[in-house]
Figure 1 (tube, rainbow over the protein chains, first blue to last red):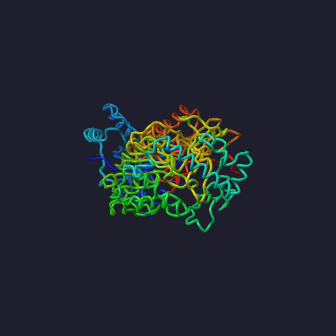
Figure 2 (figure 1 turned 90 degrees about the horizontal axis):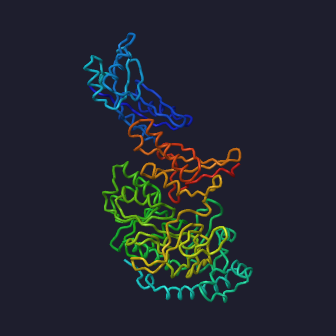
Figure 3 (figure 1 turned 90 degrees about the vertical axis):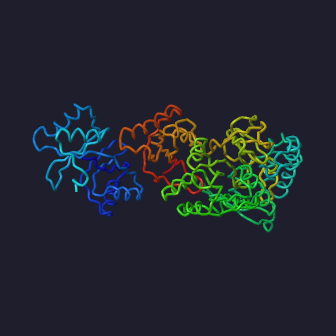
Length: 142
Length: 435
């Protein structure tokens, strides 16, 4: 029962910036598990779950990128209609506010996973677990 | 500590008598030895003999940077070239370099003045000075160097660049004082921190910063981050180099111009008229003791004020305010006068730090556009919230609009992506007349 580390990278609105990031990560032998790109007219924030967060962050920072680690929750989404709805209803009932989320498929487990960022990560993990949802730890993601 | 107690505390009457005597002498010398000045005096119908009081200064011709370029390289020298023992030159980023030559006595005076500066900052012969001004044609490095030696301090001639190594030297050699540009001090701080060296924890206690305009906010930031007392020094190579004026540690309020060597005036940059004491305008300096290349009424292009009220440190020499802009760096954007320092203050207000920035001015469809490139401060990205970043962006935009009435596009860029100059920071890129 724990939160996991997410890598957030500030991306200047400039051609080739994303490719630079993926290139740096490739060189550092980093494997990406999930990612999402939030963009505004002027800049973007790339968020990703990688197999070695510290190494990836350091490689990016060394190359001049602004990169940071944030805590997020990885939770399994039941593979049936209403699966995600159950999670979000539970969030609402406990007044947990989702800042952003993105989905991916866990290749080994072959299940849908949701990455969720909210203000009170610890309490959210607690509530999810108490309500029978499967919160995946960092080891569990590998 | 006052290095030259007699000269630096000379009562104003005596000081002015000395200035007049020296001014007359300089006029005689340039008229006799520099064709440019003979012509300039003749054209205005004045002769050196017309200088009877300091008020007559206003009748004398100005000297501009362009005049120095026109007489490149040695045309304004007033002494035979074999008496010149050193040459310095300005960077020449905006045209031909300006070249200056020093006689042995010029270097002697310069070292004295620089020693006065370091002393005014509270530096003594027991101090170790990390001198990170560039050594070379630029006057900063050697100017500070010989001043430090004159004072009897221990000078560590690191020069500019190789920042990583500088942080180690700063730590290992135990410098107690440093001299460099203020932007480089912050750059060095950041670089040192990346190597795990916190400058605030080192013995470093005093910084003498100059060669580029900076703000009180930047002083506060440097003092807080580096844990030192930061003082402002002023100079320009055309007139001598660093050490033309210096803040005293006692007041930290304005830089004493060494009036036994320089005669200052403030003029309206547009009309050339002298302005009354206390007015903001362009600083004009006349050298009183220079032999190699004496200058009459040199237009510094620096915008400042002169304060003749007595200073608590006991020096009688006039204090010039912080340089708030350059009359030729002044940007006119849609009719609004704008100095890069204005933007710097606004950035400071937006986040409480001075991020590195660059102003890019373009013209589209005959309209001026101002873009402010700002390096995203790490504090803003601590959470990865987009809203927080956007708030920062909008705050700058709003401040600029409110205080200057100019709409600017704010572009957040990656840290360290705006080039750092080791000498003067290149804050403005004006593309309006390009291509």
